[in-house]
Image 1 (cartoon, rainbow, N blue to C red):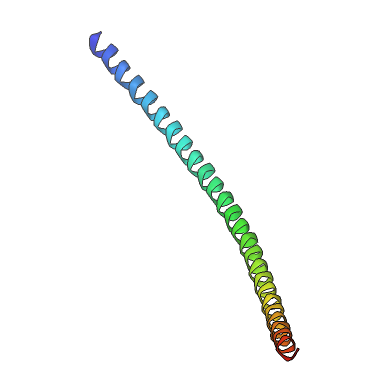
Image 2 (cartoon, one colour):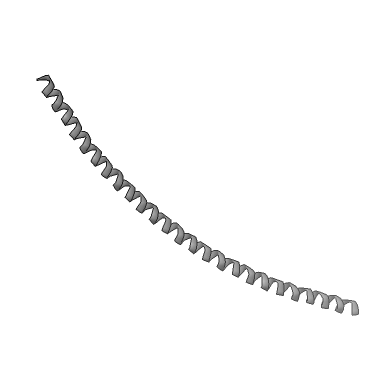
Length: 92
């Protein structure tokens, strides 16, 4: 009787462990796929945000170069005006 009970106990443990292992394996596989999907979405979002920021930086660099160009033209005009006013002042 003891052997029968012990054998039944071992058989039950084996079946329960096997079922638990299969369920655990499915859960790990599912969690892995969810995690992979989440990482891919995050990666796509980061890539899109990086591209948007890169476009904004390029636009700002162009604007900065344009403003610098206007400022250098303005400085040249001011320098020319300053030279003319000094020349005009020395003649008087």
